[in-house]
Length: 208
Image 1 (cartoon, helix red, strand yellow):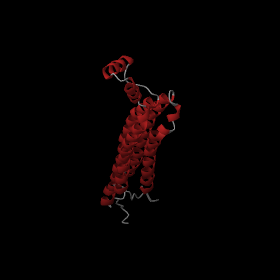
Image 2 (image 1 turned 180 degrees about the vertical axis):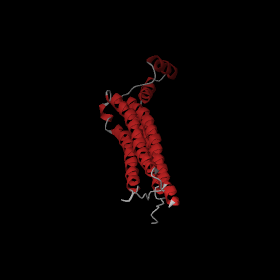
Image 3 (image 1 turned 45 degrees about the horizontal axis):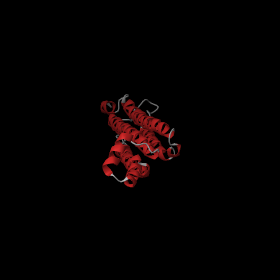
Image 4 (image 1 turned 60 degrees about the vertical axis):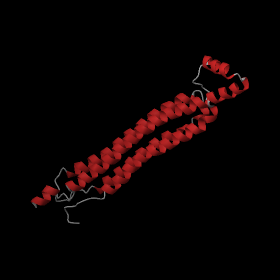
């Protein structure tokens, strides 16, 4: 009986519930940070280029998926925690509690890192796409005049000025941003996969 009490103390369930809290809370923190950073950039860019708002909402969606990962793992961990019997006999072991705690931390920390990455990439990516779509140039008029004087071909410089403004290359920037967002989202997915595997490790004092 003493071995059973040692393997399944009363505080073992708190370890499992800490894993549930870590999975949901940290994943939602990452999702909120990604939504915050990307959302501010969408509103900022939409002032000058409203047509790009719906296309640039992809980082918001990908940041929201991170919270779903934490929710899925949290529900699975919560259902795996055994309740004590009517005679105050605890069957939930420390081994299971630590496994569920590690699974929750794996999902939560991975989601937090992925959300921060999505927020930063989405912030700068959305602003860059909006600037190119709005024909905002990074060169001053004096720089353009100096390049035009050196070139000597006015027709050629008109084409170059259009390239410098960058309205035709916004799709290339958007594709590059999308690829970075996909690999950033994959970080949270990796954490969820490992958490689901780790959560299967359990030991019950009931002898099942």
